Image 1 (cartoon, one colour):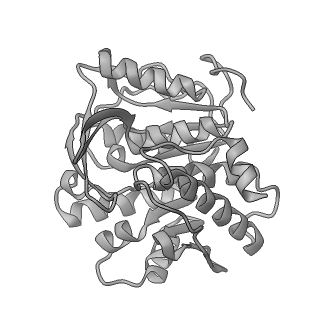
Image 2: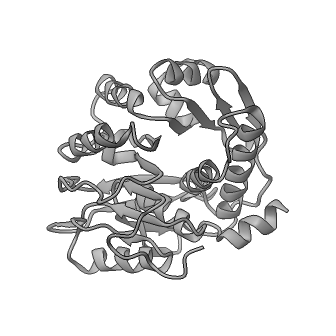
Length: 306
């Protein structure tokens, strides 16, 4: 496990590419601001799990950007060179209802500097707004094209309909990336938005047909589906009191990536899929027990899995 934030030039286990922003959380009792953005949350979660991680993003050299940098540094995540490239840092306003679910409004520009990581990591992760929103989405795709034959690529579309334009455009963008990926994780809500009326097993099969090796679809309290060309497995969720659901999917993704890094030599055998799903589900359960995107540390995850 890392003892401090890696320095530029460090060989990173994971590079995450995607947006970092400030979540403005509005509840019946008031408003607060926290660093967020799905890819930044995944990077933060990986850092908390002791994985040597860098984030390539686009933030402003402003107060909110500084808050994001401090937040990432606290988990040992390296903010990669070229990431402070915008005039101002983006924000997303999350309005929480009484049951803890969130609705989002975004103020975001996504324009990624054409900077490739200095070294190819073991895993390259991307997703969310960064893979859909022009002009930065084209730069993300180019980085995947450069790296996908040399490392494992993971992808979480984390659908935000308010930012995606037409359904046909968004579906085309999503499917055009799949041949560059190894592992795709999406929620059942993402799957239903992308493929209305389709069974989740059929959505997973479509993702695999288009080039991914493992499709993971989370179903909240109903568990998660992990599918390869030769196996489909439903891993139960972990029962948990819910403070709110902010960051739960990102925490799941972080633990899934850590599991991919530590799975050994059995590829995607059913026993490996079960272990991946169990670890990721536990991470999500720990996250929803407490407010905000607050993923587990490695010690917390190990304690709960033992």
